[in-house]
Image 1 (cartoon, rainbow, N blue to C red):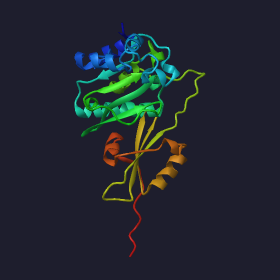
Image 2 (cartoon, helix red, strand yellow):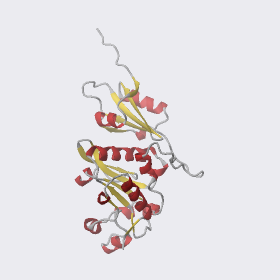
Image 3 (cartoon, rainbow, N blue to C red):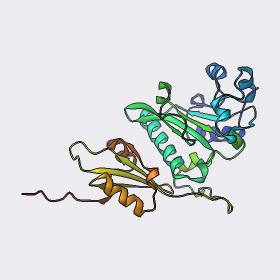
Image 4 (cartoon, rainbow, N blue to C red):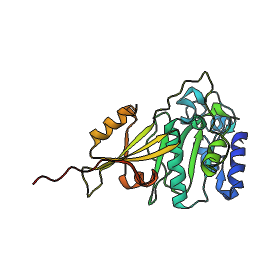
Length: 258
């Protein structure tokens, strides 16, 4: 019978301790999950529905094989739309920044913006940036099946207790990681068609950068050691809010020609 990863139970207990309602945090899937598969169920359920070797949570990476009967996903609800958006955006930013406490995360699905919609981050880059509408009201996190028993609480403690003395887990000495910042280009602001914005995440720190055009922004990114392949695009207003809204660096518009 599928059981909850003990480390996810610890994470759930922590979330309950900070005030998230008990019945708003789920690990083991309900009947719909038991009939469709996914990370909310273990090998026994997948075998029962004939998807032990074909479910996306088993076949797309060796990190999910062989796995066990542990459910390896966490749903977090019971929060306002703003809180869900902020949590989802922060989790995705941490995953993209490559922090050590997100390396066991396969995907994050949740609220795309303050106004709604659904976004998905897939660490493997296989699944689309989309999800079912119910993810507007909860944030879903899938963990690689080989991470059963590994710490899954520190990340949430870092979000909810940023002044905590608990350090961010560091990489082991023999682990090679890429800590390049993440640059997120935004669309040009409608009333300033030649102004672009960028959000920068590096080691959990955020910076908002405004530039005259995307080429200039790309040049700045390269000067910071960021590969252009890490660039993605999203809404100016949403990203500006996510990254603090106050420009760390501003490029003034050129004077008008007579």
